[in-house]
Length: 303
Image (cartoon, rainbow, N blue to C red):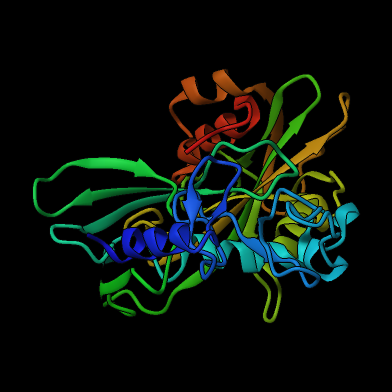
């Protein structure tokens, strides 16, 4: 029996288990759901553990403290990065990890934002390959430091030098069209790509994404309105070396005008399906567009 099952059995005997909105039961000592990774909060009045989706206590109807809610108007921005850490943990593409059970060692193949509505804390789809039988699967289990362990991380450096960091933006208008730029410089000169570029020293990737979108297309967006799609750092994604990009989704009004500038030789609005069928997108931007498409079309997802 795993540690989780043992803890849960003990919690149920003492009637201290709490139920997540995804349907899973958890020991009172777990501050995030074992199955979907959603955080919990403990009522200061009666000590009952509640899932984060509830703003009132299950037992005494006490209200969740304001500092746990974050600023709703800002999309839970202050808690958002912490939430990502509980979901992804130390996992990166190419790393090897274990759930703590026999034959549970796996390699991470991809990390993408899972199917949750915009404005809701996301889970993260972790695509893995299990070492025992080669089985590949995509799951949304958050990182649990009490159970999960790092087996091996990818080398920090290789013969191509240090990591470089960029930010890209999938800009979608209310007509469902996505904004692409035509690259002016190598690599992929003349190919269509997402607006984006390098982070300036000390710059946050979300701020860099908004800045690059404005510089290359003239489309203004507020950095706080951008929604993270995922982090892409697979080996070979950029012929210049080791590049990691944070990709963001920006929603803009219909009729938004874009004008090519800076590193963009041209710009165009195109249907998302047509952009994917083009077959000449730079880097791994087709993968990013597919992930954005899943975000836009998914309903209330479940793990």
